Amino acid sequence: MAIKTKLGKDGLARDWKKLKLEWALMQDVMRPHWARWRRKPLDTHAYVNLFVESRRASPYLTGHVDAWMYTFLLMYVLYRLVL
Image (cartoon, rainbow, N blue to C red; front, side, top):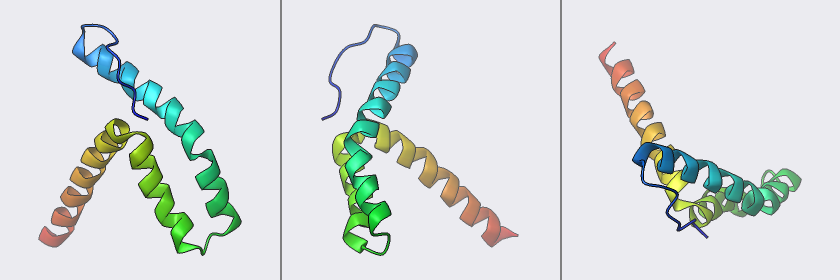
């Protein structure tokens, strides 16, 4: 379901617009999965589906989020180990 379109020639502007478009797409795709998890918060399958389906719907966006999140998480863990 990822958006496969050229949005211009400027790399940063094109990437930012693609991230915004994929965010809108993922909001629509993920709505039923969030609803299922809210109905049954202890259902582990519903919880796992939040991660699986978001990556299936928008690998470009979730890849960018993961890259930043894991970097900061690793930096925090290393910081706490040193102090």
